[in-house]
Amino acid sequence: MTREGILTAALNCVNGQRDETYGSPEDNFNTVAAMWEAYLGMELRAKDVAAMMALVKIARISTGKSTDDNWVDLAGYAACGGEVDSL
Image (tube, rainbow, N blue to C red; front, side, top):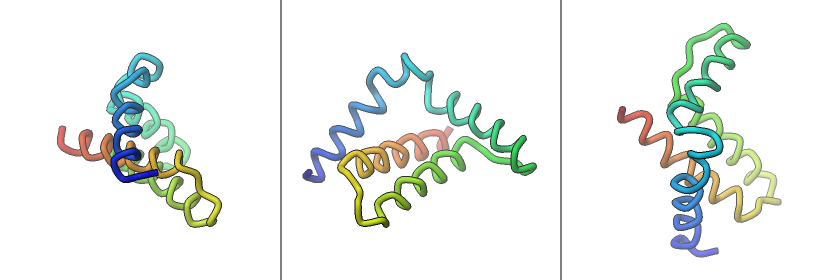
């Protein structure tokens, strides 16, 4: 998959049906952060969720058995994380 293909697929993912299905990334990441806070007993923000989800994708890539989807998701988490961090 090309750089453009990865970015285009990520763009379609984060700006497509995802919002209708799961709500905005900010709302969804804040919900996840609240759940992780309760479990971990520490404060987290939406941008922390995006960064940690990106680390999940990086861990999958590091196995040497990654798929194009891992790279697309990584780009999507980076884009959403950058957006929620700027709000």
